[in-house]
Length: 151
Image 1 (cartoon, rainbow, N blue to C red):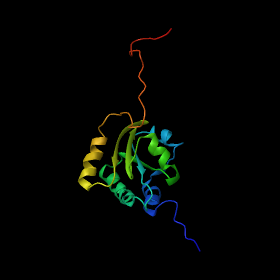
Image 2: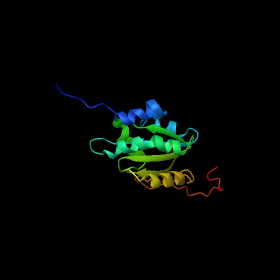
Image 3: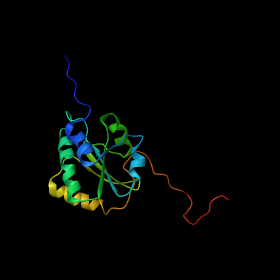
């Protein structure tokens, strides 16, 4: 008999079941990211290839406790991780993506020491939105904000 691995690691499922995280995919992440407050998206990766993704999933509830009522967490299902990672320019597993009002803020890639997490999350909560590090050239209008352009 062939054993199959669960679709999601138990520590990742625990984030949704016990800590109020939301499942989002490439179709729902934008709407979810526009919600109120600071949004943190976990891209855990394949637990066999990237076992530290399970460590990040275990630490995330502790970060939620360290920043009470500040972090709204979502988890991306394995089948959608690549599409979401590409959308936000993430190239490393695991990654925590920080979003606010639908906009990219920053990312914390890999497993970090606790003090590093505390410092980087506190910093993320104060950073302004920026362009996600995706491939491509940002579009810039040739008109200044005060120029009415074609009429």
